[in-house]
Length: 96
Image (tube, rainbow, N blue to C red):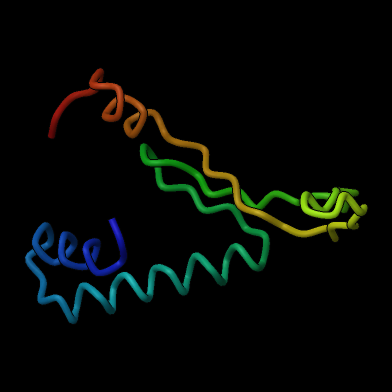
């Protein structure tokens, strides 16, 4: 599912016009991006948690040439799924 399909599904599910659904999704993305850049966790109970995770710098190899390359330290995002999402994915939860 791409962003346009998500906007359409959000509009249908929430009974919104596509333009309003796009604004909601864009605002959500902006908030998540801002909070992740501030290294804050975002928890949506039952759905999951977005956790900023630091990665240390490390030595890797260029697969084409075999020369060593230093990959700098950075922060990435880990997603930990919530109970209800896992149950829905595995068919073990209640259907709403």
